[in-house]
Length: 118
Image (cartoon, rainbow, N blue to C red):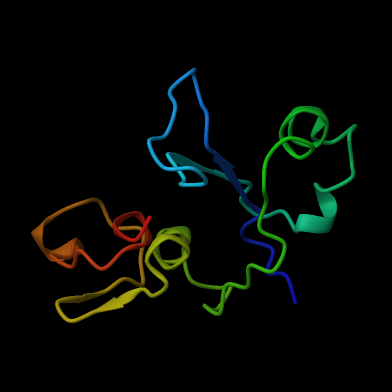
């Protein structure tokens, strides 16, 4: 079941802006294009709704087709984005459940995130 919060398109490229990787097949860059409040089936294959995504990005790059956000749709956006990047919204020092402004009480010291694993 695709939640109506995020369509996640992950674009992986070994070559980007003429920068070559030193290892064959390694990922140098990962871009995430997030479409809030839109199901994937409303974007993928719908060139009139999203021409750049469908005609320029999807034929050339990888995309996530099995992303499932387990958080309740009723909570604000920020915890969903944190879950998308970290695989959780619960950390030893903070549980994200709101869209509060960044602060000491609305942040985490955790470095266990997707970007650290690429």
